Image (cartoon, rainbow, N blue to C red; front, top):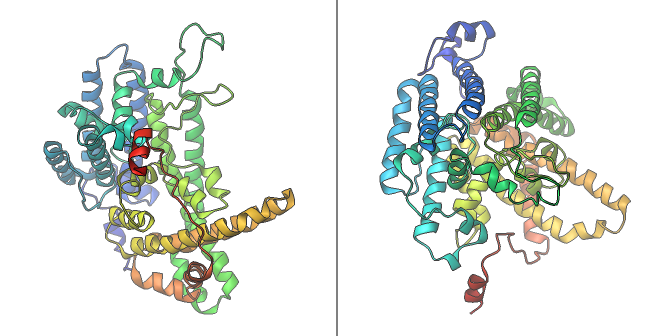
Length: 460
């Protein structure tokens, strides 16, 4: 593992240093303090934005402009001169409106990369492809007119998502700015039958408070668990040379569990910021309650109770998974799973650990799919069998995720190889044996259904 920089260096940043005393007091790197400060300020700004710049009180141009100005300020505060790189990238891509592949040294650049490529493909779907060649979802999200410069800048640099995301669709964002976002979702409900004569505007306060509670709990868990179970423990001499195999697997699981709350914290707080601004409404549930999960990046309950690798990935970093599906999985003509994992690794950056994680994810995904297709139906005949199957697959899934994701947080080659050698590369070997020897049943990826004309054309 790379040597840890001197303590004094951990407080350096290219952004503002006004919170340096607070950074020293808390013992937390200054860039992380700046990040949290920006997100908390964004939360306050979001309430102000929803109340005083409501679509009924302010024009879309005013909302676009102020959202962009605040976003630019946050980027400059957090990253200083580095923000110039971000702005140049955004402006360059506006002229050509093409996909971009860029290095993601900082989180804002990662989010902007997602948005640039998402918008590029949606403009391509709207202006460069025939309607009958599009899936239902591609047709719904297709952008059929080039965005104005103000819309474009606001979409990429607005204060709600520029620091921590998540990525969202251009048409959803513009509908939010113009005040059509909630109304569009409410029209999906038959309000006349429910006794309402007009469409009520739901309040996000309940969702925001709930998500802030999750954010606070995640922060407390991270500050507690990360110190008790640091990732460096996985290359400790006792772990590598003295612990027995089962102990190594147990500590691997515990250490990776301790690393997750920081992601829960950042993503849930970002979701709360959007909701506080009035963005993220996703219609009503079966009980008639408002759903504010359009932009949610994770489902913690489903993550912690996942009984398959697929279920885990579908509920972890949801908006990034949606982006990968939009720009890669649905569009490549061959090996969609392999190429999607590879793109994910490239997008995350240059650290070798990312590539270990995502390349390991390929055989794990294929093996899990093969086992599920061959054996799951045997356990559905009784409730007891189904419970036993769920318990076993839950334990296997949690261990497989810990094994696969460990290099992602270790980053470097040497600690990754040390960890995998200490557990004898067992999951790699098991997955390869399953892929080689287990009968492969025909499997069609569950993609969006295409239009009837497209299906007929393909059949012809």
